[in-house]
Picture 1 (cartoon, rainbow, N blue to C red):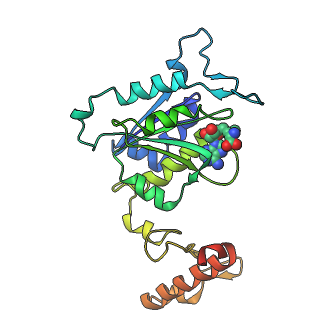
Picture 2 (picture 1 turned 180 degrees about the vertical axis):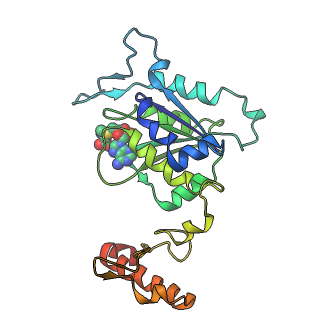
Picture 3 (picture 1 turned 30 degrees about the horizontal axis):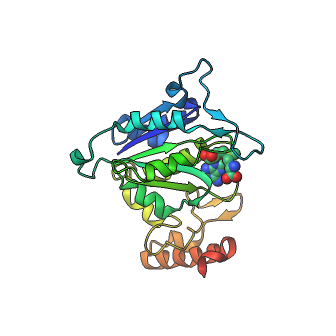
Amino acid sequence: MRIDIVTIFPEYLAPLRLSLVGRAVDARTIDLRVHDLRAFTHDRHHTVDDTPYGGGPGMVMSPAAWGEALDHICGRRGVEADDGAHRPTLVVPTPSGRRFTQATAQEFSREPWLVFACGRYEGIDARVTQHYAGRPDWNGVRELSIGDYVLAGGEVATLVMVEAAARLVPGVLGNETSVLDDSFAAGEMENLLEGPVFTKPPVWRDLAVPEVLLSGHHGRIAQWRRDQARVRTADHRPDLLH
Ligand code: SAM
């Protein structure tokens, strides 16, 4: 899987060199490339923003540098030479996008090539998404929000989406079956949160691990976990049960 990230703060993406995703990058399971948007500007100050048409506060990211960066990444290949398997999908993090969920992460984990465009200020000139949505050598545009709050830039949202998708790419996690019991996992857990988990010792500060987990009885343990998932979901996220 190839992942390109365009940002004015390349250092912000450094955590992707650590831990699980970092190991996948080292093993070349994920081909990660981070690009500095300012490298695609031509003025002395490497300007990437301008005042908004229609007035109002804040600045908007200009389309010119974005166009150059994204064309450079994709390469302007002839569509006839394209078999569809190697077209990048443009991902634009934005609070005004559709919600990014575990199902989206699952979908992304099967994509051959994702390109993330990290906005700043008031966001990116809308013609950028419009243009790449219509380009036959791209696989469409996904405008996605990671939650109902506003961040200062798309970098943190990109970190979230890349990590959520990368851990679902075959070969990235040590134990592939561990994701099946996760909160929101496709199948039985789709609308459920995972219940509490425990490890040794059996008693810690007078708190004992639930008996059933020490019983060795797989059927009863599985039933207990299902019950706990429902209890926790009803408590923390009743909206998921409707
Ligand atoms: N004016 C924009 C609005 O109200 O929709 C907010 C712009 S925000 C200050 C700057 C950038 O942060 C956005 O372009 C986007 O890249 C990122 N961002 C902020 N909140 C986000 C969220 N909830 N999900 C994904 N990206 C977000």
